[in-house]
Every structure is written in structure tokens, then in C-alpha cells.
Amino acid sequence: MIHDASRTIELSRRSLFGLGAAIAATAVAGPVWARAPKLGTQSPYYYRFGFGETEVSVVSDGPLPLGDPSGAFLGVPKEEISVMLTRNFLDTKNVVLEQNIPIVNTGSKLIMFDTGMGTSQLFGPTTGRLGKSLAEAGIKPEDIDAIVCSHAHIDHIGGIVGTDGKPLFANAEIWLSEADFNFWTDEGKLGSNLKDFIVHARKNLLPVRDRIKFFKDGQEFLPGVTAIAAPGHTVGHTIFLISSSGRSFCFMGDLTHHQVLLLEKPAMEFAYDTDPKQSARTRIRLLGMLADKQIPVMSYHFPWPGFGNLARAGEGFRFYAEPMKMIRG
Image (cartoon, rainbow, N blue to C red; front, side, top):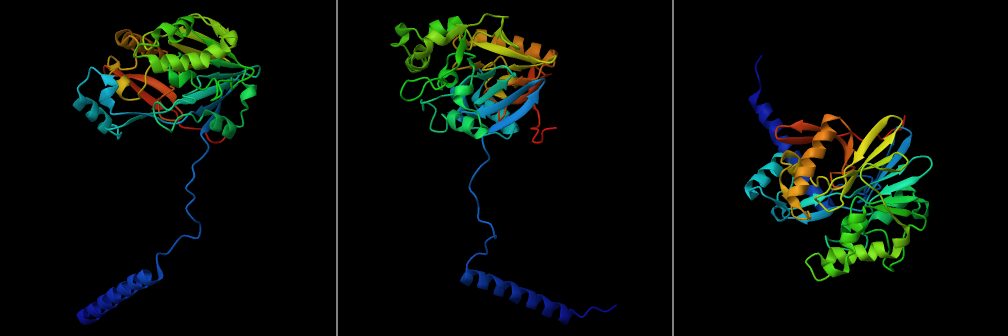
């Protein structure tokens, strides 16, 4: 078969002329748009799933940026932290934590764990979203029966009262460790470097003092909710085992703040810990227990919605996020 080179060249010229004409037409007429305009919106910030006989709705108080990781994650060279983040496709300049707030409907009680930053913008304007997230999830603040606080840091008790200082959850009892309540509402600490945390804790806890109840380590203080002491991050930091129909998962609060850094190297220290060394020992012990017993976990600060499983990996652990189930069976 003989190819006609002159015909091939002519066809190529025609193709080039056609392409040039199309580009010119676009330049004159402007770009071609899709029939539907860009929406610029995102999905509501809640996720709902069944667990045993309970229904769990995870809502968000919004992303919480910590900035340069070397300012918060201590005891490991900055270069090594950058390698860990890069290896996991994460920003090496700005660590962003989530604020995952589970609300457990047991059938008899609606229980919310932690409340976000509230009115404080200490970590920027992306926090303080709890009210909007609740509305998106169809949950009314007055329907919350109990608020369980893992500890009394700003980003966990900040949403209990509003800008006017009045309680936002009119019918909720508040559960907290007595040690944390005493530590973070101590007026004598207002002159220390903890001032912002003390002011915020007093603002949110003192107006509801008559509704605050204290749990103890190992106590099932609400139906299906058992406290497990996890000190170090704060003096009374607590995690919770939530059980229903023979199944359990653990709300870890701030046992670990990051799904890579404090799991791969759980002995690493965290700047916001009251006692960093105790916190690291507690983290290693309890993460090991949860991994060995294959208890599903939910972390307050892991990527949304923070639910999954832990496994041992080398000297540390690995988090396996559970796929979200978007269709209820």
C-alpha cells in the first residue's frame, strides 16, 4: 500500500487551521461555560450512623488550625516531622485539626460529647460552628439531655454558653472530672500563662455550676457511657467507652491530637499538655489497650468524621478510618 504524503500534509494543515480558527473564535466569543453554574457550596457538616441500638450524629465546630507543627509537637526534630507529614500527603507548614463532636441518641437520652470553641477565636475564624452544624443535623439545643466534657480546655467546653453568657443548652446536665473543674476555674491562675484558658473555662462553666456533675474513673455515669481516666493532657482528662447491644467504641477526646504525628511516635510531646511526659505515657498505654482489644475509636481532632480503628505499627500505631456509610440499611 502506497501512502500519499502530500495528502497527509494537506490534512495536517487543515487540522492546524481548524484548531487555530477554534481558538480565535473562543477568544472573540469568550470561554464556553457549562450549562450549570459552579455552586461554591459544601455539604452540611454532620454525619449520622447507627451503632448497636444507638444512633450517633457527628457534628463539627469547624477546623482548628495550629500553624507550624514545630510549635506544638515537641521532642522530635523539625525535619523529621516534615518527613512524616510529607509521607502522608499533609501540609508541612500548617497543621489543621478537626473538632468532631459525637451526639449519641440512646433512645432515652441525647448525649453530646464536648462543645467546641464557642465564641473564642484564639485559633482563628473557622471555629465556633457548633450551632450551625446542629441545625444542619436537625438537632435542637434544648433536646440535649447531657453534655459530657473530656476536659476543660477552650476547644472542648467553649460552646456551653453564648456571647451573652447565658447557657445554650437549657435542659442539659454537664458532666466533667472534678479535678479539671477545680484546675481550670481557679481564679488564682488568671495571672499565669494559662489566663486565656482560665477565662474561657470560667465563662462557660461557672454559669452552669448548679448543673455540673462529676464522674469518676471506671464509673458508668450515664446509660452505656463509662469514664476512663486519661491524665496528662490535663489533670482530669478522660476518655469514654460508649456501649450498646454488646458493642463498644471509645471517644478518645484529646488522647492523641494527630492521626500521624502522635500515632507513629506516641512518645512525642504536645505543647498544650499540662504534663507532657504523663500524657505520653497515658497515650501509649491506652492506645495499646484500644488496639489490642480492637475497640473502634473516635477522635475529636482526627480528619472528619474521626471514626475508625487502631492497630499497632512499629513503635507506634496506625489509624484506619472507617468508610462513611451514606445509605442506611
